[in-house]
Length: 494
Image (cartoon, rainbow, N blue to C red; front, side, top):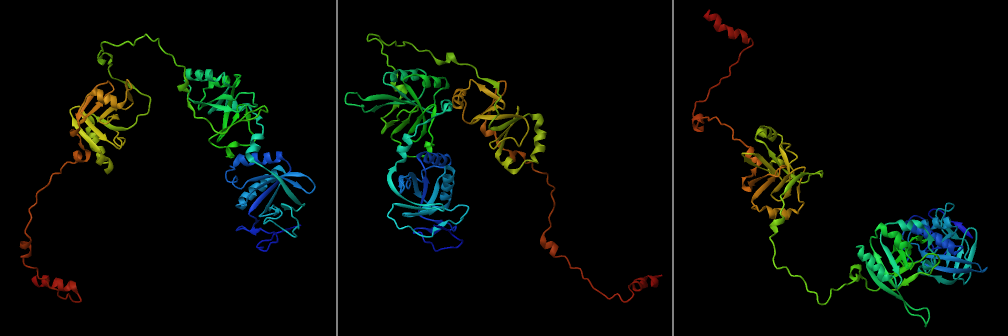
């Protein structure tokens, strides 16, 4: 019933099948035929382990199909956007024992495999009114679609499997407390300073003689480790772990399918999947939630009690402590100043010849009787001389490798020192300070240049040079024997 498609073949018999850019025969849709519902769950579990169903959901359809022999099978139908998607689905189908087909309307042929790299084409089409006709190299069969299976309903029907490792996982928790235990649980978390939010969900009564069921929903972003065993073992409290948008699974269990890859649950509601075969709790729309701290127990004083009023206040200077400089193991940051002793000034002069122009331009120096103070906003590492200082606050420098105690904010320390903004303060390791006016700092390049000594030279006027007589040069022949002509006057004189 099937023929292998050859390379560059363009004529096909199956309606809706065409050749894509890679030469593979494909239709607009893809189909995976599975023998049972268990095979479908295995396929979804394998697919969601690596990819998300978000791209497939708009075209995904699951049907219960019935053949002419009365056998019921599962048909998974989706949009075949590319051969890459079809190749991935065909591999998963072979993994779970299913078959992959491609087509457009009713006729679907077997998708390509190792025996036919470019796909298959039907040698003869069946004349039938069936809703689905599948052509395979081993069989051909017609199917009628009985009913559609919704993916959300299927995920709700699947029972989570026991998995004790979920109780040890870090992350948020969703606690569902029974009506009598909810207020006590909220007060316990408030006393333990646990952050979170709480709301109350209501389920309709099971019969006309019952009352609506209300349960407390407590969301805790970070549950302390000491409380995990308590919430997992307390009767009346059910702990859930978020497993995706709008869905959570009971702690100690794991859903067969990765629910994070199945965006079929609304963000406005919440689905709580319970273990041990219990029915899931579905909340179509969550009620507004409030912080846990707002539900703390309120206590009032006696009505006749009056508040104590202070009659006198004391100045805050009584608690002032001296500023200390202590060694610090933290790596110094923003080291932008150095204090060079006067004895090291010759070294600075020799080092100036090796400094780049950028360092000379960005550095400023102040010459004092206590030494040379050098500032470089880009870093002082290029000048390895003197005692380094780290910038603690604008115009406040602390010796590198030391920290100020008490550890107050830089703004608070600057206000407490009561210095002018135009003054630069250097704090030494012995807690002493050196204060220099900012205007005393000049660019390093300006301070380094020393004017050379010049030798005066008299210049003559250009007119005097041009007025001198020109030299008259004559060229006479030297003859064939230049040496004899040269010695002739000497012989005559002799």
